[in-house]
Length: 378
Image (tube, rainbow, N blue to C red; front, side, top):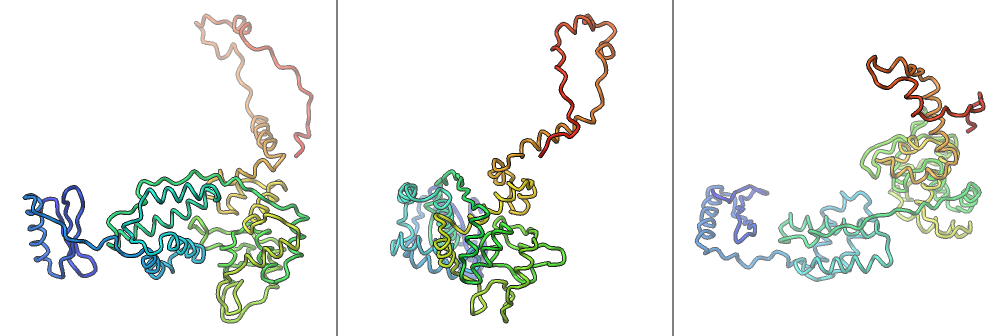
């Protein structure tokens, strides 16, 4: 068949070949032999320069209609439905009724430059990532010839914000939470370091009071993990009311997932006199207080669910004893080391270097250090 192929898609046979450097896909019908004949004809036309592509409809669908189709087909698969749905709708407002094929890489890059003045790189990248997925599916669904996101590089992210509360501010915030579910959500975040989405997805069967662990089934990195449950968390969950008809720990009045936490949380922040505080900062607060209390960074990495220790090391500077502990481990390691052999024992018999001559090139012996049987105080 030369450079062309046939394949079956959704019950219909299609032909796939290259013409003038561009890939062409054409749906033929349910008969395989007809598809083979069509492919043979197309290949002959291409070789004889007689192939002229028909007036295709690719790229003509209005973006806002495509966005609605995308939500209908993919909405249930989105990891954070509300957040990602808002991103899709924001792109629909950006492009409106313009055809898919008229959206260019140049204007997407211009949008990125404009957003850089008011948004963090991570926020811009998440929005671009959603648009990229949308346009890739438009190509897959044969609504678009080629994605205009091809070749666009994402911004380098610097998530330097590590806003955290003191213990006194934590108590003030909890006391300022009027709604019981907001107070409980804040308490869970401060005592576990879990993300808001992970807390809202908790089911009662995820709480193992016997072992003292919370099972986070679907975390941000796609892997499950176990979060230790301290006495405060255990008492909070045991006292929190079970709503009939749902297994969600925190649910709306109708038994569904809570969708609005921001309003109640921001009102509590205002009453507590806390400025520029996001719910995610409670996760930073947990991590910061954990490290300042002498907690191990690698244990913190497992609790927070970080893929790499690099993310966890942003909290290392908060521990005044972190580097001292590292040095103390080396002291402990070398304390039991076997003494080295003397110089005369390691020199070969015919060596031109004698113990006396070698001693003249060696560093002077270290000054005696005062003995400290107690070791470093941590």
